[in-house]
Length: 520
Image (cartoon, rainbow, N blue to C red; front, side, top):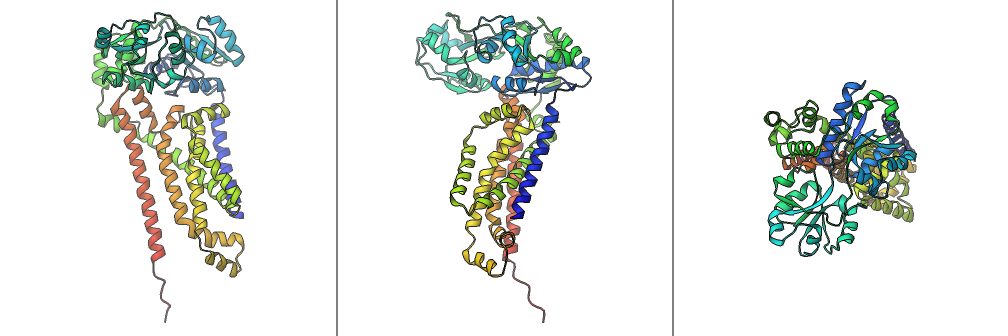
């Protein structure tokens, strides 16, 4: 079958070109400083601080990869060379990354990280530790002052961030140390504050520099058994960075000890309580205005935006273009791979069942887990792993509907093609595929709808799209920003449904059109 082979070659060519492009962009070279961040407010701000500090000393503007997800994803991006540096915490490095002791010194960490091509440097000057917090009224009513006090009240509901539940220095060890018997509910860190304020849960894990602790009247419980280590903010970086970009690295070293806990809490408050953009907060701090009340008010007046401004912000068209590219390329490659593959296995029942079974299994893999695996395999973040993940998720509906469409072609029509002397490729091209086309198109329609929704995960690895607004909105617990990301994605899904409906209507009219009358 020449057609399927030609389509397969085209698909492989597209994937190769995409891989070469991503590989080229991931090469260290002499390019810009690439700064990463995790998916919470403080990490966003620190990433902007690093980038703006280095910018005047760099030949090209630094690239900021915001909201890359949890520790595992950001660390993998650093290890693979997709980013050069990000702000991390000593307790996380010792326990979560190196799986060692919380008392490890910075020298011991560097000795363990050196074989990986990584290093720890530039302590920024503040400790942002883990703690548990409850509503102040509940603390007074129940006499809650320490974590041991909380453990004596198993009726209280705990809502903990998913990362904290799974971390080596998180819930499991804490529960063992204090004897907690509750089964915590997993929540996004930003949403947990709203849940505890609404009394849906009673206790949450917090970062000690979170701005909403005082704002919501929460009581931070004392770690009376000294479970949590110190989480001093430092830079985790690639060892080739000082050699590759010496001036930028020298500028970053000047940040050592410059940010104290009060300054960090104030910056977090401006982001979470005043909706000041991260880049503006970093710019004010570096200009020496970070703690100025007048400057904060001016920035609040200048940058506070309503829902309409967030929805139709200047990034809308860029995010739309990125989202469209992710969907169009992934679905297009899935068509180029899935349709010929389904055709090739259609007549082999066992092989067909095996191929569709593999596609079904891929559909069940959690998106973030798949992205983490792809980052590790490819050594890159951004568009390439996102496109591969979206392509894999699109394969099942396309392949299944192709097989179903071919199976629905009546045997009489198959035999008619053979009787007319058609070769198998001709019968496929002129008889089978045209008759299976409506069912095949329905599979593409389903795959497109899935891709539009799933493409929002691309923001977790720096690939852009409407998910950028959703990720940032989650970090800030900003409902308006969440909607400003979700509504354009929904509008794009409705638009695609309208286009497919129009195409299917045209196909129905074409099939129902009466044949032309013969000339007299």
